[in-house]
Image (tube, rainbow, N blue to C red; front, side, top):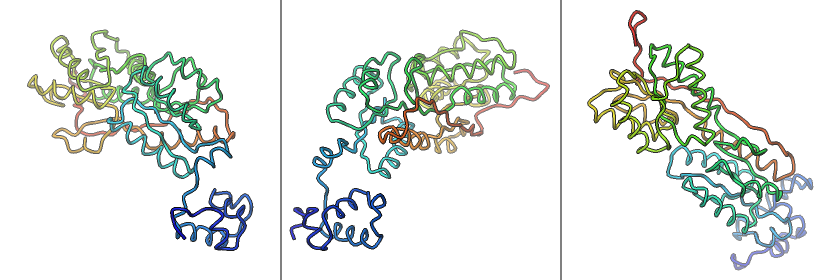
Length: 345
């Protein structure tokens, strides 16, 4: 038999098993129809031997499902999002789905284009890390009946399920650690302030200040993007204008890389002159000249939870608009100076 032309009919004829049974096995419905393990093994062995490839177009027409999911994220080159995509991919494959990836570059215009394009391909659902707080295109998508789940961030005004880190608690814990280590002048290098991830981390930072009765200082809030350049520029300004600051909370690892460059150029050292904690742990942080204390987010777990939530929606098993918050972990290394109890920060 020509392997390239193997069909359900040809496998059925070779094995002497009905076409419907072959189809059910190769479409992962054997358990539903109580097909024996021996029959399943025989059919799969023959399908492998002849390199059987199912006709996805015909299958989609029959089931009204394409077994594809659209993933729209703002920066695939960012290790944070790539590791999250890994978790998504693992869970998608388990459920027999393929991912179609679109990098919006953090631009709403490109996100709108991605949604339009993926809708035309009849994907079964969307996972989106939204690039804005407006998102009429996402509202339209949801109202069309297409399953949608937000990942990493959410839009408060939309009743759409989401899976994120508990950013408020994470920033609260990181800032509290700096304060209990003796720091009273702590700067916060932010990301895009209109995104929920940045806003929630800033809120956690403020909660810690309030808990320990430290006043907020507007001069200590800097940065306007999750990028190396933003972290660098913000830290340059901070070092020039606020010499009393002894610690920085960076809301992303890209900001932290820029901050470290600015600190080095200023002839200062971490943690002797200024302490630093960042979000987004990386195993390589342990091997820096000064190992970097960081907030470890459960990237892969976020991906897995998000995919499970979306597939449940696709299968009609859930219509939840729940916001799931996963716990983070503060990884303590050497980038925070601990002041003696009898000394002043």
